[in-house]
Length: 337
Image 1 (tube, rainbow, N blue to C red):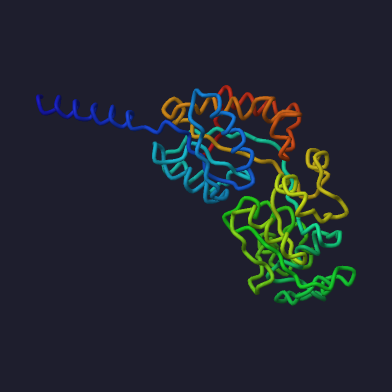
Image 2 (image 1 turned 180 degrees about the vertical axis):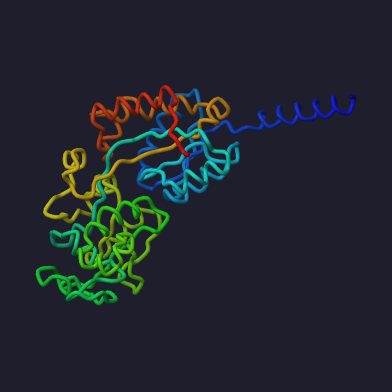
C-alpha cells in the first residue's frame, strides 16, 4: 500500500513538473502562403501585452501537417497553417497519434498567381498551355510522350520564343497541391487522361529535365529570382504579388487577371480557400490559444476592410465568415474518422 501511495505521489509530481515546464508561447507551423497573414496577426496579438508573440515557422503545408499530427503535448505545435484542406491520410495520421480534436478555421480566399518580372512582356496563358509546359508526359497527335517542349513557342507559336523556366514549390507545399488540382489536372487534355488510364492525378506529375526548377518554400526568394530573370515564371499566393508590385506582375490565366473580386467570387481560375488547424487539447494548457483564435477571426482582422486585406487576403463571404467565427469561439471540431 505504501509503495502504491509513493507511486501516486511520484506520478503527481511528474504531472505538476510537466505543467510547470509547459510552453508559455504559441507554436505555429505550416503553409508559406498563410505565413504572412499569421505573422501580422501574431505581432498584433503579442503587442496586446497579455501573451507572448506566437512563434511561427514556415514549413509548407505538408510539412506542417506532419509536425502537427505527430502528437499532443508541448513538444508538438499548437496550430498548423494550410493552403489547402487537411487530407484523409493526414487525418488518419493525427488520429493514430492521439490528435483527435481538431478545429478547422477557414482564413479567407486566395488566388495562386503565375508571376513574372515587371520587366517582361504581358502575357496570357491557358491552363492547357501551363500543363504542357510542366507535365512529365504530354499528349501529342494522340500519343503520350515525354515532354519535348523547351520553349514556350514550341507549345503555341503565339507565345514568346523564350526557354521555359518555371520556379515551382516542393511536393510538401499546399500551393503545389492546389496548383496540381486547379491547373495541371484541369489543363490536362481528355486524350491524355484517357492515355493515362483515366487517372487525373497522373496529369500532375512534373517534368524533371531542368525546365521546372524546385525553389523551396521561401516565396520571397522566388520573387527575388523572378525580379532578376525576366524570362522566368513562378507561382505563389496573391499576397506576394500585392507586396511586390514594384518587382513582379501576374500573367493572365484564361484571359483573367487575379483581383480581389475575382478571387472572392472564384471567377479567377486559380482561386482557393486558406486554412489553419488548431489542436483543441492544447487550449487551456498553452496560454493564449483561444484569444489568438478570436483575434485572427475578428472582423478587424479578416473581415471586409480588415487589416489582413491590406496585405492581400481576400475576405470570406458573410455566411462563410459567420461559420468560421462560430468555429473559433465555440471551438467546434471536425470529424477525423
